[in-house]
Amino acid sequence: MCVINSGISANPRLAIRHAFRPRSLRHRLLYVKFNAVIAFFFFLFGIVIGSFLNVCISRIPEGESVVSPSSRCPRCLAPIKPYDNVPILGWLWLRGKCRNCALPISPMYPIVEFLTGIFFLLTYLTFDVTLPTFKWLIFGCLLIILMVTDLRVRLLPDAVVWPGFGLGLAFATRIPPVDGTAMGLYIRAGFRHLPPYNGYLFGLLDALLGAALGSFLLWGAAAAYKIVRKRDGMGMGDVKMMAMVGAFLGVRGAFLTILLGTLMGSIIGVAFIVGLYAYGWKLDLARRANRRGLGPINTLRWTIVSQYQIPLGTFLGFAALLVVFTLPYIDSLLPR
Ligand SMILES: [Zn+2]
Image (cartoon, rainbow, N blue to C red; front, top):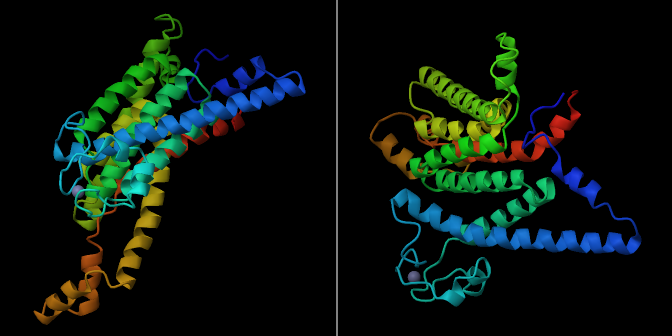
């Protein structure tokens, strides 16, 4: 019995494919062309949205408005001309330099635009034009802002996380992050019949359970880290971010996200720190400390290198996106 229509586990693409199944060769060619055109528009739309995400990424940590003033050069503050403000292409034909001051403009801008375009394209290819598509696009945009902001300045701004959490709860009433965890708990508690089944309520409950589990697990991991290493390993930002992720993905999705995110974060993070050591990161600092008699040089180098803070939020965000795109397939493999 399937009473809950999950945003993740339902495969709307198959349903639509079935309804519009091409019946002749000509029909089939038209169908392929039509799909390609829509996919291309999703990609273009993603690039344009990516350009707005860049504005959020560069302004929200500074506490600036994302609406006004219009785009400026981050160095000389000269307004960017409309014809230079074309996503990706503008950066390419300016060869990554400001037209006014000729100082370099970060390649982050075209990269974020391009990746947002790819994300929109993938979302269309996985979920087609459906309500879940809308939910996952919003979720992905929030994650992209958080991932890049964490990577740049090691911040997961409340101004993104809390509205994101609210949006996750709101979406859960229409497109539940099911699981079915709330329903399972309800039945197990013995309330088989009362109150009558309410999709909105159970969707919301699943989102709240996901948020609670996600933030609690990460908070526990942070507390354990603090006991073992005797210093803060992750901020409360990651814990709050997991509340948002849990509200969108539910219990199972939040659990998978933490598993994948912390695994990738520790493997890639440790490899990066070893790399920093091997390439002599802050070697001068270690030499100076050594001359002052603070200890042997290699011990000092390890101490400095291990201070490097791994952007856990970036890895959690990437893991959450992987969960969005793989859960429908994992779901279809599980026995019903
Ligand atoms: Zn400039």
